[in-house]
Length: 278
Image (cartoon, rainbow, N blue to C red; front, side, top):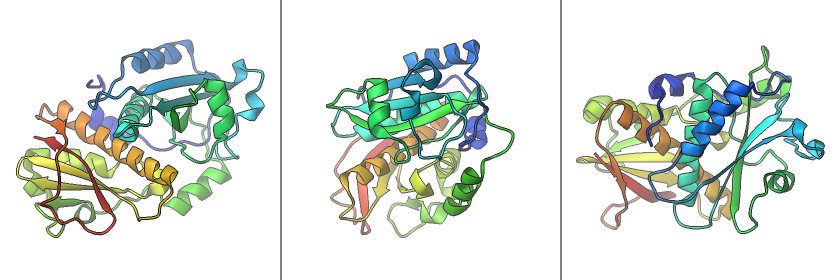
């Protein structure tokens, strides 16, 4: 599904918000968000289950903690998936589309994968026990000033910085950097990938252009815990949302497919996921 919002403009405007005004969503904004949630899908055909909860409407709201990271928020979004291949990628894609829509209507958000009480949120959102509960996001109206905690976190993770093109995008192999001139009409989608959020701002995605196809990879070291690996794949899903939605906004062609990469020598810690045929 193509989001009916200005994608590039919204991606450029989106930023992580951890400090909120202490008020509930307006009826208009809540209904608009719920309508968007009901219509979202992903191009991988995987069911992604979406949740919304308002703390002040629950008696156990004090248990819904975010370890002091989030201030003032009353409404939270959640996402869970079946434990199947590509599901984390689908979750990242679909949840990020929700984030972008919230940004478009003037709401603040931030992906949380570790800094929240997973058990209490899982109970409150009625997450099925057999599903993977990967992330939540507060959603609300940004406060006029950031909290000290948020300011320190943004400084520590260098939230506004992004890796250069030559360390993320490649032409044919993993030696030749892809330039914007080489990308031609597809130069804007990789730039939107570069602006995507990721856990600890690690930017674990890599993209390799091969003729008319864009191959997507995720980077992580061997020995990573299963939970951390899942989050890396979610991060790639976020990047794929930015790429695919931008492709559609610019009326370019692009369909996701999967194929073996046995003929391509991969650098250490680089794992192949999927490609988009342009």
